[in-house]
Length: 341
Ligand SMILES: C[S@@+](CC[C@H](N)C(=O)[O-])C[C@H]1O[C@@H](n2cnc3c(N)ncnc32)[C@H](O)[C@@H]1O
Image (cartoon, rainbow, N blue to C red):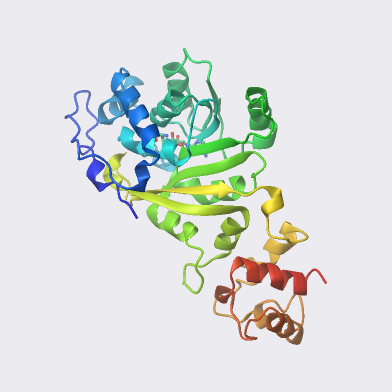
């Protein structure tokens, strides 16, 4: 685990003449690989007027009549351009990529994505921020901003045609990079992960605890939930690095962390006849109904206890197994014995 503690900027004070940000030592660890991307982005940032940092974020917010960040929209803006560069690097964003950015806010991450040569499709719920980011990048044709709630946005009907128009190589997939509002993180993960035909990788800033929980596929922990089975079914998750809360304005109560999900193609999904039927078995109303309950009890609405015990025995598990004893593969095999017979 790598924490970006050394990159904490000065404590945020939203005045028109803020104190200069504190500059820490250079970043360490895998957060900053591949190195080339970061060095290039940093060089560009130095050359750009108003490269995003503490000053420019506060200036941007003040520029529209002191726009007060809205808690209900998870508006915790990034003050540290190095973190934005690390987010883009985690997704390997390069020239010619099409990137979906959720919640561009003042456009600090958008700037890094555009500088890397990507075409960006940004979905922003707050009308003021959507206008701000449109105005800020009005000279580029490589940005489209949609004022919309991502949880209501139909990606297949609106983003897919945009992506196809940009890519001549029809097999190439887009990427998602976002400093996500924490309050919609689970919903967005559920929305995007089954879209392996559209996106190759999804890189998100989440709450540190959420990122750690989603990336950990180990069993027999109290944190093991149906969402872990879901994440591993559709992707290969990787916890990238922690981002201390001092890097955001306003400062949230908890630290953030960057997680990447490498999305599987449909052919790589575990062999279940119907994902819908599989996930209805692995849900809080079914296998995970009472985490300490044995499966021979919690799955009784599907089969009789002796049938469940026989299936558990066939896949090499004790007949007393509980949901937290089963990895993704075990659930897949149990499903094929109980439901797909
Ligand atoms: C954590 S801020 C990140 C802003 C910017 N990317 C940055 O790094 O500073 C989250 C952004 O998402 C926007 N947002 C909140 N809920 C949203 C939703 N449901 N759909 C799209 N954007 C949303 C907020 O208005 C805000 O601009």
